[in-house]
Picture (tube, helix red, strand yellow):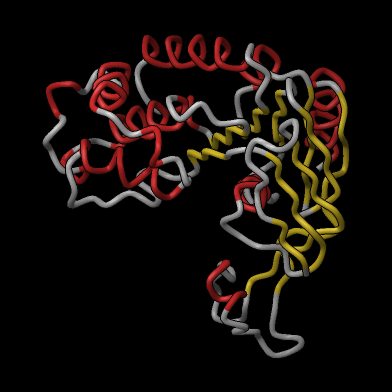
Length: 253
């Protein structure tokens, strides 16, 4: 396995996964990057493959939807792209900065205030140089949480946590934005505002990966779609073509 680090500012934003596998150890938890670096390997034959032979290229300007049934591997693929799960085999190469909203509060501290979590989120994505009070204010204002700046994360509902995490991500101006079912949480007004803000950001030519069960959202937002089934990418085409294949697959089952 080889994992190449981000080369920030040296190349046009891109994502390249080559022959990547992701496995689950017998204990049931996916190997993290820390475990891999510490060489805590599982014994041969004790791992279950979650993703297999993943090959993917994405370049600036692409908006890619991830489609598939529950348990197909959509979230695992997004976590592989984000660098949360390292490949067991193969290579992952990212040029540019990455921001991901994959799980509510993931990587943030529930005991810290929203204001403090802004700094924490920036540090985790190597963007601490962006920190300033005006950025904090913009993040909280967009999330409609300005009056909750000093509240700990744990006091927020799931929907409000989603708002905060999304706002924190897009205000980092990432080259690669990764979203997992983010638009299924929250009221319709905020979802509409979030999509508009994301589309405006995408005009600056970063890369988007999003997983959603909403066909309308994928068709509206994405220029390309991946169909994933049983841990493999089985189709990479336009959203219309991929959904046609997906519906046929569902009807046959």
